[in-house]
Figure 1 (cartoon, rainbow, N blue to C red):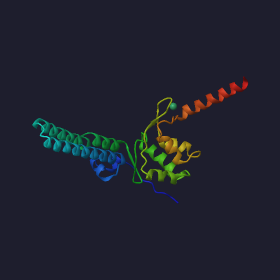
Figure 2 (cartoon, rainbow, N blue to C red; figure 1 turned 180 degrees about the horizontal axis):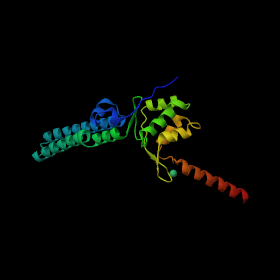
Figure 3 (spheres, helix red, strand yellow; figure 1 turned 135 degrees about the vertical axis):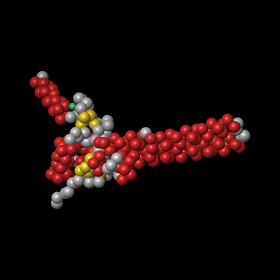
Figure 4 (tube, rainbow, N blue to C red; figure 1 turned 45 degrees about the horizontal axis):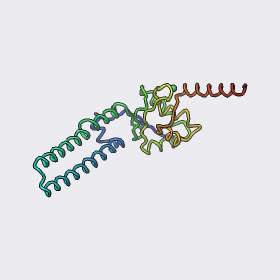
Length: 208
Ligand SMILES: [Zn+2]
């Protein structure tokens, strides 16, 4: 069965980061939105209770003024996160770096050229066995976080890592490893060097 793959940069798909934000569901963004909304709500409820209490025990006017100021600051913070700094920044970042694959967003696969992205993804989706697993893992809303080699600190690319290891390990397992920050991941070069060193050490032990 042949799969038709669509891959587009966010930049070419949407006019700007605002229209992208309106059209696409981005898990990270909606998580931030939910959290900030509930924190603001909880803060407002808390301030309301303090205000009622201060009226009951005949608090000084200054206290009420302070509570009103705190309430305004809380709202200002909410606005800043939602519309001015954090969320727009995230959206701009995604707009510039992410790819749109089959309706799913591939964030920062550290691919410099569009052609090479096309190459890797074509290969993973269309040729490899386990391509279905990979599509499934994308559908489960996986965000491909950036990782660096434990030893030499060069950027690593998920698709490259997936392609090199999928014959030995399942996609689900690979994904778990990639997302576990306590697991050390090596780039190809460092991995080979480590293996060579281990073999050498074993050889030396045998001779002794
Ligand atoms: Zn390395």
